[in-house]
Image (tube, rainbow, N blue to C red):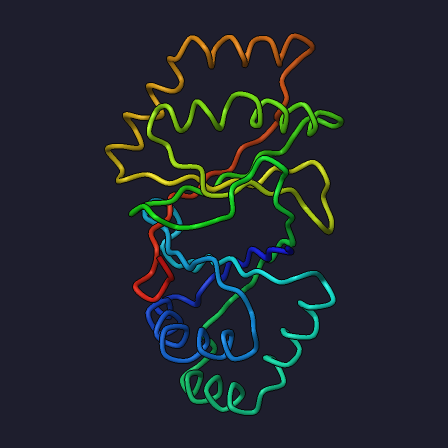
Length: 217
């Protein structure tokens, strides 16, 4: 499967209208065109005018066919025009094409809160980073109540990034569980052994997200 991560920066004051369009129209068009939906989220902490969502396709050819049909749908054009009579809703769009890693579960949303993290690996260190997650990190997450949702690497473009999403019951649980994970001697040993030749990552981005009311659960 091919997964597409899309992040929309809404125009100031327009996130509500954008969510309304997705809830009432866009998700229906996606389903009619056979576009798989993993989930839709808005930020709990951080940027308050972003909509983040993940779609799924069979492959890039399937994506181009289905996305093209959606974009060319005259009913979608009408909905979009009606919703933008007072101005456009989206200021910018970022998208990334991703493939699940061999150790990732099939992505499913079953908690109240999700956290999307993007790790920039040191050049040449992405395989070692993936090995650490496969052999240690994912198991220790589950041990400490952190739910594994999905792990992906880039399908197109940058090839040294790891995307992953984990689930939490709430913000308090996130803080408690990550603290326990960080203090776990098994994690500290695994991290030290994996970084004997230097760190595996140079940059980490994190977004704490809450599913929208129309997101599948």
